[in-house]
Length: 402
Length: 167
View (cartoon, each protein chain N blue to C red):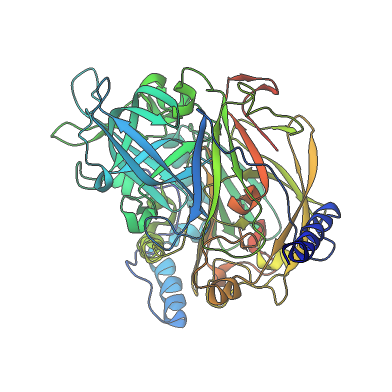
């Protein structure tokens, strides 16, 4: 009987493989990748509902923070893995260990306002030793998100809405492992009008914008690891149907170990703002990007794609039947490749799969900012994110490779 | 010194629930408080003041349907205001490494904008911003070091102008 049962299982595998081989063939697009399972540079990642219990397509992991130089540590889970930002940010409400406050040379506490698309994070910088898998970065500035430790300045709250609660953030923190070595970079070192105003000193008289040196800014913690510090690979298996949870790996380093080689991955270099181009229907969009912190494939508008928006989940597309589409990504280095992707009816995805939080065919509009290739792009692909200025076997970052 | 870049001096704290009432209110307030924007000279001088304060570079381009005043701030972010032939700003757009000051850009629409953003807290994840109310539309997206967006008043779009070209 066991042998007989094996035949239909093999047939199912064969069907899956043949669908992959012909690039979809009218069905859903399924990619196949190999996910590294364990190693000193490998951190488990889970795509699930997250600590708020309602996140769709969020890749979460745990991070250990320690008082610098001590064994006083706390491991915080439910931290969103975000290749679209740089720096570790943790909810104050999730933190039980007391980390030392970062101070300016005049002794005043340093506090940050970081703009995101839909709002801002606000809170003090505190120093931590950060441990993830077998990797450790020492005495790293971390942003602790809180609207109450220091009053939010008007110039910060004007950015939109606070992301400093579990409800708003949907996570206990954000682990930014993007292409930039710091969140702000050179602009925040300058004084005057060229400074975008992310860093503040907050004496009791009130918070004022200050210039902050690169070494005092919130860094991509990976860049501070003693080894495996030139980037990451996010490895998540293919998602063939809506499901509650999927396990993957965040691999540190590019070409530094036997488990993080580029192999056949193609390198796509980026412009100074961290974008490459995506072409779709003979139009080129030069502000396109890969971003594990976006929870769907966001592109164009309903009028440009001809795909209606959802009556219920109005942030998403709701075609009457699943649309199989293709676009072409191109790096500044000229490397290009076609990407096949599918757009399903998001209202149906949500309503027919109430217990699911992983959706490979979730997509929505992004009227202005190019193609935002969110987490579904990462399903079935090992995506390399190389950090600016770091050398790798594929050249110096920043780049993406897949 | 807080610098006013954009010209929605509508001075209303909340949009009225009815689109008709809202549209009438906008028209009335624009007419009542903004005679300057019926005059090209005043609008241009206001933009030049903004340019000076932002230490930015101003560029003016004209199409048949509207004039675009673009200011590149010292931070690298470019803000464009779209002025109709009647001298009214019907849209603003931004693009650059950091978002602009939304209060400055949206002026009287800032409070409704804040309310709409806060209403989207139960949103199942991080995604581009999309506010589409009868009298007020905002789209924005991007990531750290790359932000783009626009805001416009649908009723005020000149004939033949599509939202896609406001960028």
